[in-house]
Length: 276
Image (cartoon, rainbow, N blue to C red):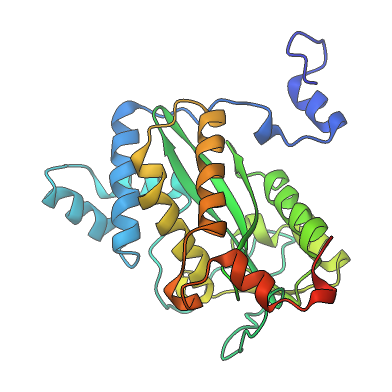
């Protein structure tokens, strides 16, 4: 257990115990009430108009009676980890020492579970502050295989989510993410390489390359997050956990012939590949 009165720092205790720091510090990232309200509006507009950049979002906010500078909108978007998503030449450079892998799924037919997994991170607003949610999703069935909440964008919580999915469901042929430095980091890609998984990274700013995770974010925000003002990270974790259980086991998808993700996953998976 973490002892906050111990002479060792909480971060050091977390490392020795194998916990991520993001799962130990149960305080959301601080932000002013004004910015928090603005971030909620930006998040909702981003879900409705994913192609909108800071300039367009500023105009959309003005149309709702909210005056704010474009640079401030851009600053909040960066803090939230979102950007306009549209096709553009990929002129970005990876972080020093990071490799960007090619996108492997163009015109690729996904025909079974565990063929392709995808992962992404999204901003989750709370009553006072915000946290980050990451999830590993099976492309074929839309099943959420694992997820984590964190107050930081550090690699720990993403690696924990991947390792949990691998432990419970075996491994996919291909693992797809965006080109963010959190996914190109050596620590993160090393986990996938060690498992013998092909790494795919979608085009920067192209939501269609990871569309099923984007659809998950839209569902979870409109059907759960926006309906509650979580006061603590523990409360957010409990609420999101309940929703994802519902999403996996009870929510039918038209694209799955009205099956739930769990039904689509296990009904199609070969019996010999079903984990015990």
